[in-house]
Length: 410
Image 1 (cartoon, rainbow, N blue to C red):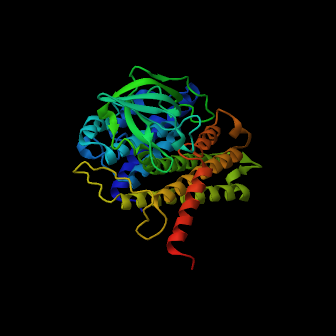
Image 2: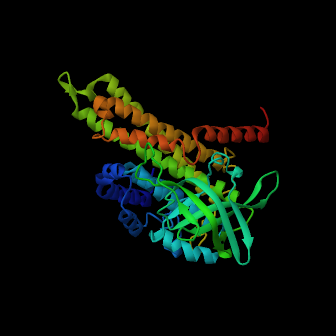
Image 3: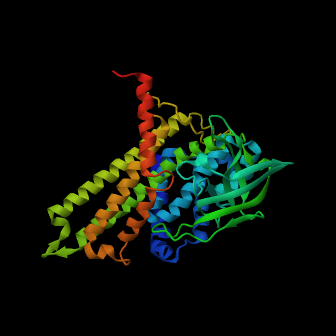
């Protein structure tokens, strides 16, 4: 059950999606871009700073309320929701958890309002699922750092104003590099975004490579400890995966809604195809799986919120990422595994539900003039970014093994 506040936020997001997103989604997909103005309107409503404390201009919502709103926006268009998820998730989360008060005061208000659009540059050509293999280097000098290297698959890499870049700062322990997290102005000399990738789905979302050619950043652009950036990134990915899970639920729900509507309108053999048992069975299973995926995302969000513990809004604490290995209050799986489970099931449900919707639409489902083929393309992306399904299964399996080792075999 949703709280009164969550219901109000959901209705606000749903109304915005129906008025401002759904009518434009197909055109954005064809054009390969959404209007920057829509981000400004989202910022005015607070949807770009949902997890940012009120003292920095955000709404100060909890994570469960955030995923409720994100699902509604993703139902309208998954590509736009991806930018909203990045704007709300990894970048402000790392700032809130590990940034200085001066950094929070300087950057969070602009992120919350949409005046500054953020990006997250972690992956590299040979360091996707294994970010510790990154080769981008940060060299410390007088008063700052110099960044050199290349990043791949960067959402908003060319249009963002502020990029959170991860780079090696030296050698760490256990054969892993020390890594720093740096706030980089995309207008900085040496920051170069490549051509847009031609993606199968999420076409309105900008994905590019980014080259960093001796990009100079001041010392106050380093967040937290210069050796802990990779840990910060992995913490933030737990929150990011919950956001992608909500995005996937939004896609799956859109597929279900289109399929139900079409099945009641489409007539064959003198009656609506919704009256046939085979179609009813598909719709019923779609509805059940969408509800199950939503419940898993919400459960992960509540687990995060419970372990995040002291979200001291008045003190500007914001969302505090829990340690990735911490058990839940019930002694069950850690938040990292719960986030992985939520994204895994929600993303695979989105792809399956979109495929079922295409089947229900029949030949029309294969046509660009109808909405479900876009949903099918968009859904596939959610199985890949922020952790492929294969990597998520490894994460979950590792948590199960650790729990078994901790409690012993009965």
